[in-house]
Image 1 (tube, one colour):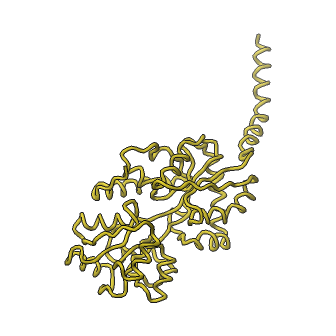
Image 2 (cartoon, one colour; image 1 turned 90 degrees about the vertical axis):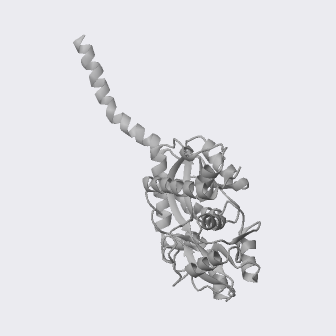
Image 3 (cartoon, helix red, strand yellow; image 1 turned 45 degrees about the vertical axis):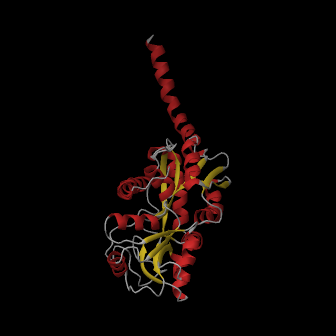
Length: 328
């Protein structure tokens, strides 16, 4: 009997060196087929970034990367397909302030929640600018807000609907007695931009790249940027915080997977995305070239991205409560 036990123990010990390579081989087997990444509108910033960097990702992962667009209904379909996917690493999605945070806070009924995603990596912020028509007698953001408080609804603000940062700013300022603008809703961001350029509205918020193009053309003035720090796209233009407004509703981009995504797959994607973000040529052309700015936690760990998401939920929950925004 003792001899049998010794034989079994010896056999188990002898098998241990074989198990480790086998486990490593299984981990290295991912991905063994194409990976699909869902994102928002075609030709939008997230779509262009992913299609631009996908050849580098394919080379690193050894499998094709398929980019698929999910549009409509305040980004809800995008969040749904990601949250409902099998957590095996073959279906991922882009995350942003609307899909991943605002929808969770502003819908009474939603088929997914904050815990239905696995954060992988934050890859950048989409900065915006608050721009005004040249006829507006305000030289900075504080002066604009003072004007809108002194004469309620005398100044109008072009927004592309309730589930946008510009509309939330207008509603938040009104509810907190900071300023009272007349909210003029358009069907898209582009329409709101054109409205302020033409003088149809006094102010609007728009993506930094296109806003500054209009500034250089002398058609609008930029009073402040919505960002985590200064931008080389807008030299000399202060951030909201620098202008004395401590409320920053930023759009940002990140890569997410469904809840329960294995750690080794999370770290594999985190590492591959970091390679792209640290490649100066790729970053400049496909990430910064689409208006994405790098600031913490961009390019950081999944844990840093997770902490960022938690802080975003806390911030947006407060804004939704104050403004009364509901998207149902």
